[in-house]
Length: 257
Image (cartoon, rainbow, N blue to C red; front, side):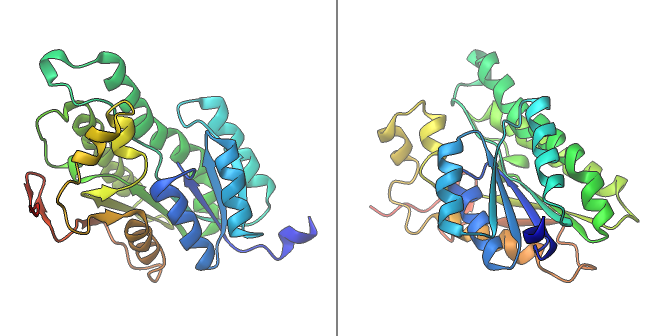
């Protein structure tokens, strides 16, 4: 336990194997946290930890499993340092079916990952965050959390539910030493989000960003998360909405010819 005696405050990042999660882990390590990176793909986590160095620990975790999340909490506790930050980043979208033909399996997966996954991890780590006396929970939502759009019913419903969870949690923790922050990105180009949504169809995934000059990238969202999480502890950024300049609203995107 010698190395733990000098360990920094712990930040836990879910969905850390790629995209926004991996970028956030790198950024938070640079901000002085010891970052616990959690995701299902252990090989990617191991590569990320090697890149970050001694300020990172990998824990394989599936946020849709109660047992897996309990194991994550136990692994974090075993590090023996204060847990002051949780970034609920794990999530995703599947399919673009209209409601009339929506896949129940896809909708159920999106609800389980985005909503119940956030619930599971928050419940598991909340006692440690509160015990630190200076806890912060950042949940990565989406502009889909407040603006429906055609073909997005399942994801929109899940993100609306997630933002309701976050708002309720903030009310319930009022007076306790835990801040509750929501970061809602618009159009962010990552390696996997759109690709997963379209079932691995690279052409359809690329079409989402066609003609868009400088869509947001994972590092942009990591910057927002780190900024919000490192404000003085009495400052709470309730909701931070961030879009590229080319996107004025969910349906208003400038595309160059």
